[in-house]
Length: 131
Ligand SMILES: [Zn+2]
Image (cartoon, rainbow, N blue to C red; front, side):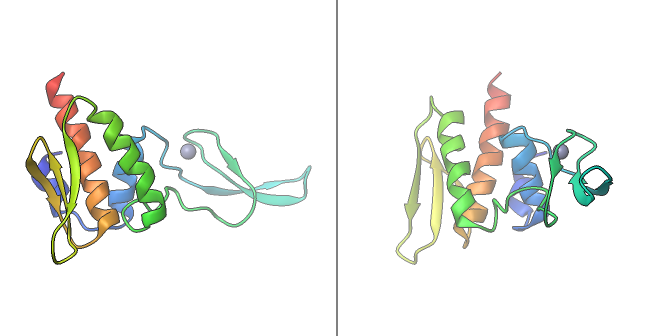
């Protein structure tokens, strides 16, 4: 995946999945409904990581690119990934967020969670290129 492809994506499930896999290296759950005779209840099961979940069907990933409350976790992760770099966020006079890495503009979009998610993916990409 290239920087241009990341920047061209829209906020939503696909972007959330990429953040979940690439940034946090976690399973994108593929929930299947199962039934437990012993508990006489149905539950959700992910065949990929063997995780189980009782209750209403959970989302396969948190809504990183759409929900600011989870986007902050992504921001913390970016800081960790880019520890050797100068990384900061500016809010322009019109309120739009801009992410900078070593003085270069990384992402500028209308939505903060979307911008954070894209910045994180680009950060992963850049740190991979360094190795
Ligand atoms: Zn899973």
